[in-house]
Amino acid sequence: MSRCCINPSILSADFANLQTELAKIATADAAHVDVMDNHFVPNLTLGLPVVERLQQISPVPLDVHLMIQDPDRWAPGFAEAGCDSVTFHAEAATAPVRLARELRARNAKAGLAVRPATPIEPYLDLLPEIDMLLVMTVEPGFGGQKFLDVTLPKIRRAAEAIRAGGGQVALQVDGGITEETIVRAAEAGADVFVVGSAVYGKEDPAAAIEGLRAAVAH
Ligand code: DX5
Ligand code: ZN
View 1 (cartoon, rainbow, N blue to C red):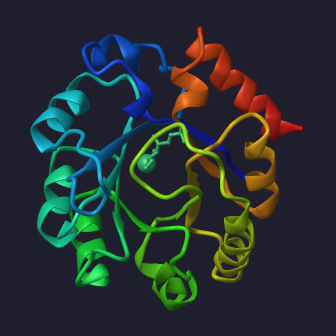
View 2 (spheres, protein in one colour):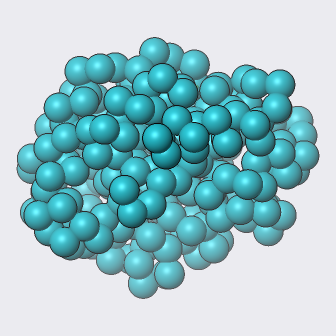
């Protein structure tokens, strides 16, 4: 595997102490920020003004996951804020190619996400336009859910398509990743792992990050 990224999700962090919580994951590759609008998913988290401040104080790059309707309108603002990657959902975007180009033009990596029941095939031709593909491994909306093994064939097909296209696109998985499920996801071809409760739910988040790295390094 050429690279393996552990991106802890601050959805499972203490929202009253985000600066301290980000400092705990300084050894991670990025901080995953879940933006939810209570329309695309039945949960509401935080928006652009908060992310702008987090971007200024975070010790690691921000990996923003937009679970919102109308990402065509909102996503470019997160790129302008300096976020390293901005991922929007295929099910919500009106013009995914135009949006990905707008994100890249603002120096952010463009990510395209699919829910567990959304087929990946209609989007494979778009791989040259994006930097990351996110295959959701739970139904988006909440942390602490169980990894859906039914997504593994899709991860495998996505990894094959990325390899066939030259391997320039990162393959992210998000939801239910633990020291056990990360092995299955990595074997299927994922290389960027979002981990919420299995990092922030632990006594020592830095040790949890190392444990996850070790689990995929075998
Ligand atoms: C779920 C979010 C995830 C969530 C993962 O909709 O997109 O990023 O934080 O949490 P865990 O790792 O606990 O499943
Ligand atoms: Zn997420």
